[in-house]
Image 1 (cartoon, rainbow, N blue to C red):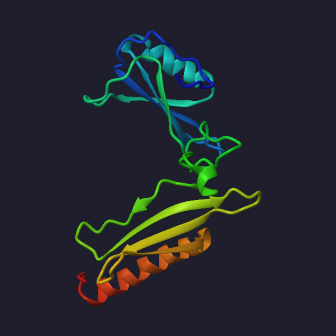
Image 2 (image 1 turned 135 degrees about the horizontal axis):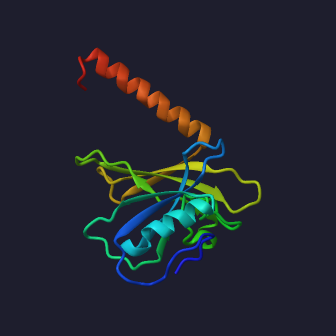
Length: 184
């Protein structure tokens, strides 16, 4: 069971309700960080919502997916939420193998075009373990087009460069589509 800073029942009967738990937004609005999903039985749903709201969280019940089986009192902390952060890892870190790699790393996201490509590309956010190191965007490509051995290339960009690259690609894409009547 995950230790969380809010009261939850632990009757361990099958859960029937999923409660999304948000920490309050800094500006006081209804937004904020999605921190956790708490699973409770229908008997404890009302009391759980009241307890979460009294503890300063925003809580919203959502239907439990039919293929999900949890016990009342089970909590899943989202790694990017405010409750998951700690002194050892940034909130976005996947928390596995940081010491071995010498860096924090988010889950890598494969750039999938839904068609065969000669090069496989993925992107992740990384940060050296050194004090004061800033996060960077790591782009990795692996190509086996005509090579005896697959060739891997890694590129590190600052987060600002990654943001600008993303925006520039969007502008180029729109320009090409406009010129070609909405087609490539």
